Image 1 (cartoon, rainbow, N blue to C red):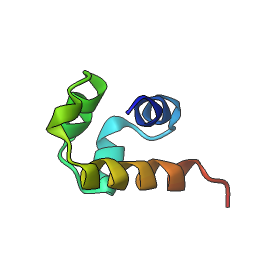
Image 2 (cartoon, rainbow, N blue to C red):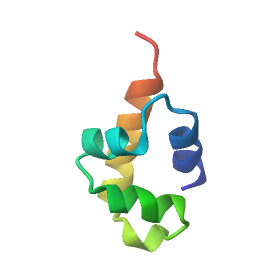
Image 3 (cartoon, rainbow, N blue to C red):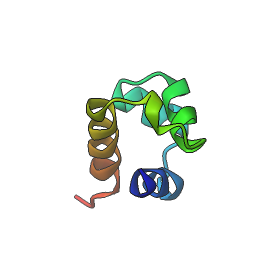
Length: 59
């Protein structure tokens, strides 16, 4: 979880754009950033991680 929240923090994308690309409601991103990890499933966390990793990886 800490890694994902740090990746969100250093991403050039806004939270809404990250949520949209990951196919998650914005509230899920807000919950994660507020430390409410129990609000997200493992699949949602993995989707979020893939979305952020893809955005941060140079071409």
